[in-house]
Image (cartoon, rainbow, N blue to C red; front, top):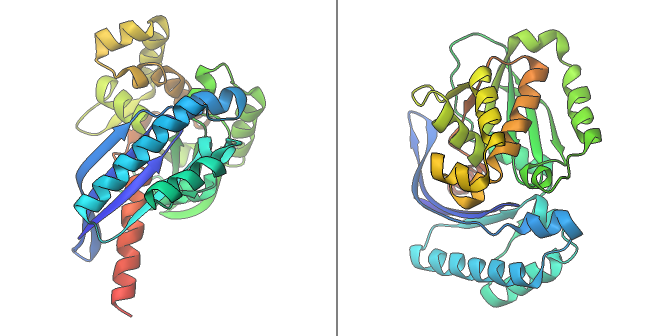
Length: 296
């Protein structure tokens, strides 16, 4: 069964088509097609709290294109979620109203807590140890979501107002970094029993280039080296040496900084990168809704 999901972040908008079905009693998601457009809404929002006319124009065209593809693919259903940039933009309601009028596309602006829950819902990872706790970290352009699980059950989750585009724009808020540290310190006695998961395009790319592609693990020493190298290079040099896309090359160093910051707090020896994100969680959400309604 084919479903579609639109994830509108601060750095890019993604349209995912995926097939969902049951295998061995569990839902299975297989990506059929994904389109990613670097809309960069956060560049405006984290500078003057508003999306410029030029970016709004391009964003609306992107949504029109996404809706046309949805109409052609004809999935069972679709969902569209927007995160930090549209949460904070003063003119987001105006832009979303225009999109609804011109395309019929319904976009829901969600808070950081729902974002974290939707992302972690599709989590699948096995660690080679028996650590009781798992810290799940998702770094976006405008926010960072942290979720703590104990033996697979969520016990605490929080969204922090810091992300790669904010850091890139010089918006490193020391208070927010202190808030992250204070929040994590409540689990200080258990740090030795923590595994760490990371989601988002940057940790996937960092893991692929600097980590172990077989285990999807990125050890902290390798990430420290990666961060040092990336920081010493210009954006053009990062593109030339590592083949990064331009819209990845500038934000990957701030992402490395944020992941390192948290890894050092909880003394994590490595982080495992997941290949799923918000759009995958939306596919799973729709599949569960569909099967539950079908079984009524």
